[in-house]
Image (cartoon, rainbow, N blue to C red; front, top):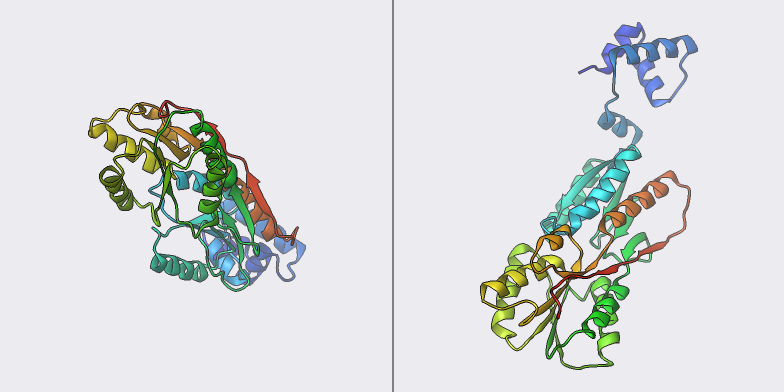
Length: 319
């Protein structure tokens, strides 16, 4: 690996001169700069970004906090973030918190130690001092820029679709209602179906880790045998319920109809195909990274909330 010392030796100048030239700090004679530029090109030298960030008190790293990457929805967001950051000269430091407060705090310490330039988060956090933070997906915070799906619209689309089907008893499984995203989805749904029916129950799940989804599916088929319509708050849960129902000999959608949420690619490969609300996961990540880069450039100080539309993706899991 070529070092700054190798460049200095090749150019016949001091290491300090090479450092000033690379970092554009301090005076470097024109002739000296030309020698250094030639040496860098001939040796194919790439500056050590970590060392440079320490000296400049700024890195090319962006910390990204996601709650659970075993849910296929969040890797799609991460992909949108990563590809956009890379195009703009930044790298992503991905943190999967697994919905653990302890892991979240550990990652925040890691971000500080690595001197990240900013943090993109799908979880509520206490930001580091003088740190640019952008919220994504389910972080509603008027003090930072946020990029969000239209959760209320998603709820309404579910309600409108359900009213075109036949049903007796509906179970709505929501996410943690301390999150505005979960509340907005539920409000959108109830604003539609409350006008037509009161035959529904609400089950709040505080976590959707894989182990928790297994527990929820077991509870459903033991406690809610009278339910013939299920609204799942994410596709992973919906697919698990479909699998469990078919193992028990139930027919979908005849015995149990299911609608999901997220629009992950796996829904295209199931039989019957899952009806779901498709979120623009990749676009959410892309837009969030763009907002972060704009904030880092200092081109705007205005705090904004960006809302991206969702859409109904029809399948065969509803009657």
